[in-house]
Image (cartoon, rainbow, N blue to C red; front, side):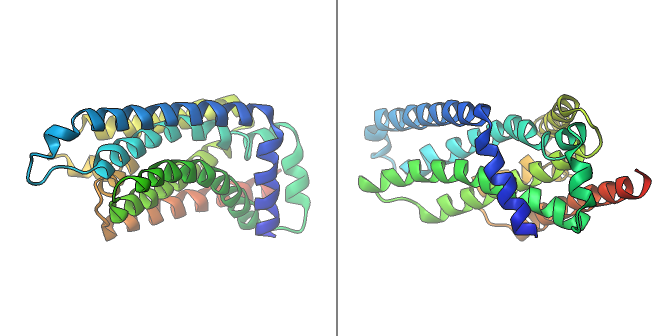
Length: 247
């Protein structure tokens, strides 16, 4: 049942014309940024060749590219999570789904997986851009894989939190604005925290993504994303359970 709901959510995204517009605009932005970073690297490649431990093209292009993707996902994901529950509640289709013989956890996990499959297409396009560099140079595979894993985990944490916000209201616009405000607040908490404010920084997903962005695979960051996603998915399941009981 989880896979059936995930398949339905995944297919429904491509029925909406705005999804294609967003994908087209997003690919243009990412391709432009990728080529701009590559051009900047080629301009200083001669000077870098004279250094002993000069950064390679993977560091010069991959790290800033995935950092940009992280910021774009922060602004993009609320647009999609708002329709997962809030829009269905407004359209009275959530009642039909909850009246079916399917548990709340199946509904939440199915919607979560469906949106993640869609976001994986965006992330895969970024990976393919970087892999094109392998035709002319040797890539740092470890750095590329850690960045890919980090951006997937960051997207999953945003989707889990966005779903919970979407479950709190029947107005999609409120759900999108609320999720975006929370994401932006967490990002501000990370960028404005002092170097010794480890407690505040440890609570923000973007700070844990920085380790992956730098090519570091840390078990602490993996555990954070796992707990972050699990906590908000459980809160969303609990919210739907309460709606089923009191509605």
